[in-house]
Every structure is written in structure tokens, then in C-alpha cells.
Image 1: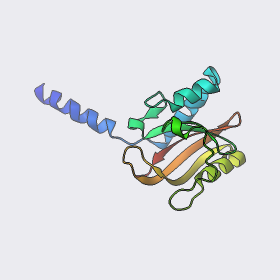
Image 2 (image 1 turned 60 degrees about the vertical axis):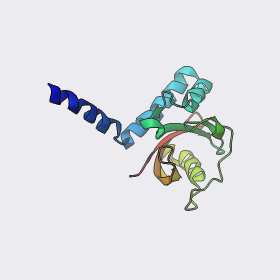
Image 3 (image 1 turned 30 degrees about the vertical axis):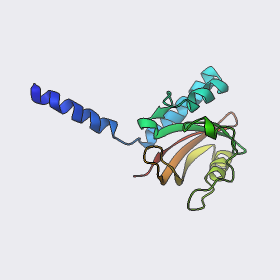
Length: 148
């Protein structure tokens, strides 16, 4: 019994350190859209932007963001300082206009994945990331995972 008790913390650490899967990312985006449908856009924006809220996972590495079709940030899981800023011309370190890509994908396909580099809040480094976005009611809801 004593050995089993010693293994439990190690097991929990391993589970906590696991990376988010693409399926979890898509599910989180759909959950945020469902929340907006039920509670209204403003309530969703507030909850999405709330650090440590229900739309933050894996220690803040996985979070939801919302943009309008002009590239303006309406809600962002990395905090309120990003809200209200038009990011349409934002580029990653490799020159990828990732917000333009996001808007184009939303307008042409309504949903999908796109790649770029972004600041990982856990490591403080700009890392390769892939994000899933979905268009709902003229808004782009998305979330992404860092590629390991």
C-alpha cells in the first residue's frame, strides 16, 4: 500500500504535464461558442479573457481567443491588454501574417487549422503553433496548441 501511495503523485504529475490534443482544441472552441450562444457574446468575452477561467487549460498554454472579421481582438485568453487591438497586420517572427490568414480562413471555409509562431505563456518563447478557428455569428473563435 505504501508503494502505491508513492506512485500516485508521480502519476498525477505525468497527467498534468501532457500536451493538449487537436481534438481538445476543437472541443474548447466549440465549448466557447456554446457558452456565447447560451450566455451572450459579452459574457463569453469576459469569461474568455479572465485569466485562469473556464477557457484556460494546461496552465494557461491552451486558451480561447475571439476576433472580428477585420482582425480586431474581442476576447483573448492571454489577458485584457490584447482586447480592442486590431491585429490584422500582425506578423510572426517568420513574417507570417497570421491574423490575415485566420480571417481569410474564416471567410473562405468557416473553420480550419493554420500555422504560425506565437509567444508561449509557459515558456516565454516564440514557438511554432497551430490554431483551430471557427466562424460563428460573424466572429472568429479559436484556440491553438504549441507544436512540440
